[in-house]
Image 1 (tube, rainbow, N blue to C red):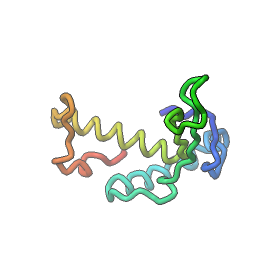
Image 2 (image 1 turned 30 degrees about the vertical axis):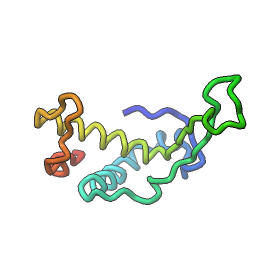
Image 3 (image 1 turned 120 degrees about the vertical axis):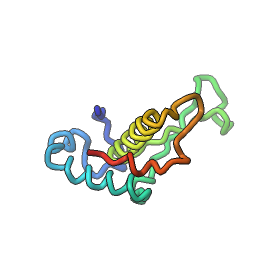
Length: 117
């Protein structure tokens, strides 16, 4: 899984430094992510976003709130957990042949098949 080098205010450690020590941190993140996926609990720090309003197109009325779109920047750990959860959910749905159209596997106990190994 690739992560770009952008660092945001929410990241306690710059992304480039995190990548440099990924071999040391990965086992701890794996435990944290597994526990989060299995329990359905997401740490509060992962639920915080840095929101930046950007004007959608140049020339739009900057006084009109509808001219803006919101950009939500999450911490690197939040983004990693989100990607892992989405990937595991998709694999789980495919495993039960539920990945057709809008179908999801919410009706099944997916926490049983969503552990990271």
